[in-house]
Image 1 (cartoon, rainbow, N blue to C red):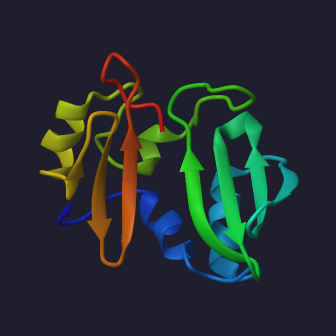
Image 2: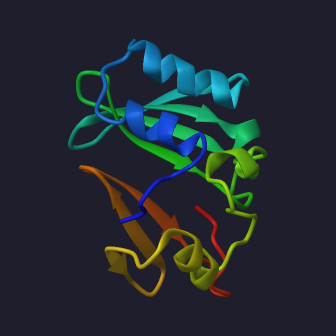
Length: 138
């Protein structure tokens, strides 16, 4: 577990588990600071997405508008552009940071799989995914 995260990641983590329209969710949306599309899926459960395509961010709200996940894309993917504020997200994190660079920055992860690593921060977690060249993409 990282001893202390420095950056806007703390604002996003604080929103997880909160109900819309909690002001902390709106604070996180202000960091992203761009227009967004709202889409819904309704397979096994209703999920509402706030998709900030121009900033590479997606908020996923489950059930009764509870924020469950914040996706931040460090590389452009499909309709999402790369998150332009990475320097402020986690101090020391760079575009395309490798697995070893992230581990050096944050310490050994709780989960270390072939395509991702996961760090717990209290009862929440930060999940990094990697491309085939071991560079971060999400």
